[in-house]
Length: 240
Image (cartoon, rainbow, N blue to C red; front, side, top):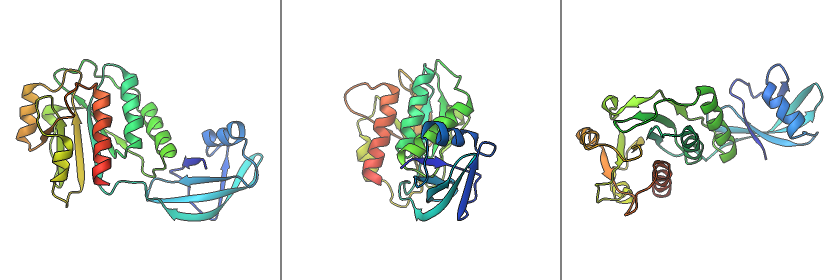
């Protein structure tokens, strides 16, 4: 069943979609999906954990839907997951991290500028938001992740009730080992992934001084996008 994010709509018993109010969705329903009477879809607003199963009752100049079911989605993680990711050299890698990170439950993406960061320019916010919205729709989530403005390591601060961990080529302890002994009453986890070449010793010392924990992802040197997604998958596996 196709899912659509409609942030501004009020989920009354009857919902009307037309070319003026929702041009992109109208185009998709009419020209891409060729929606027919009786077809069902899922709409959600991102404001809570609710999603709405709707059925098409009238089409033409407008699409009329009736809400058939309101239900709670159980696809969000029980804590806030933040990915603090050094900006890759290629924008395609950043977009890929946004897409896959959203699928893995990231609540906030923070682009990180480090000593070894070679690219500091991100894609346009409109494009990045479109990527995460499409990933939310596809994956069954109901909350849209936020994308922050770029941050330097020196500006990074830890938050109360947050466990911050960073990938390090010098750590002997795995991410799994850290996660198994974390205090259970946490509200959020921040995963920090450095650039190609890793964080500098100075940056690692700075993070250690803030109480962030270094972790290893094994004996092999991973690309930054691989390290990010491997870390997020481990968090999902151990803490859902």
